[in-house]
Length: 223
Image (cartoon, rainbow, N blue to C red; front, side):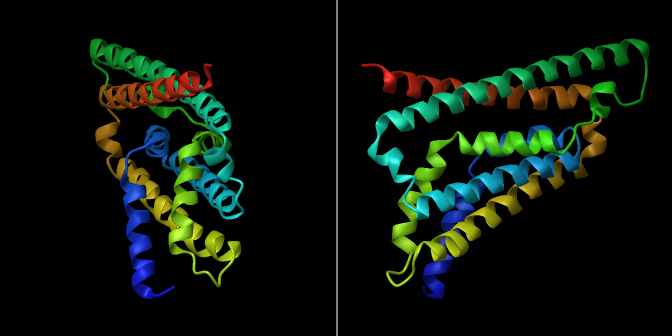
């Protein structure tokens, strides 16, 4: 692989990273809880993406290209999971609005209890893994990209380590950037009304993506 070819591949990886999707929304949602939680969600998404890269390089992801049923089943499961995340995020937003109303009525200045909530790193990490692994489009992305950039003399190991690693590192760096940006704005985000609106928008977007994936999966499975 020449330098120019690798730079072209890196450009594709950057475009993939900055395109808003469930992984970005999930990292943003957990970054509102804490920087540690946001980083854990980003790590979970990145690990799952690397698994998809390995599956694509080994040819297993070709199953989704050859079998519509397999693709639609995974899409349906992924849509259901995004709906669950969307509902939970929207409920959290409602709690933040309630806290904001209480603080305003009482004339308090301290951060809301909802803002001080804690979570173990495993929760956002596995949420990131589940969100990415139930999105078959990630596998199809790698499946379509690898043949174009993998030299004929190289095997699956090259595709997994070099190409897959490049995409995963690029996406992870972008997600960590989102987490750090949220953390840097922590003082502004200490207002539960502000975080409530961010949670609400994130929840509605997750619900929208979930509904879309459920519809696609359901229609695809209908006779």
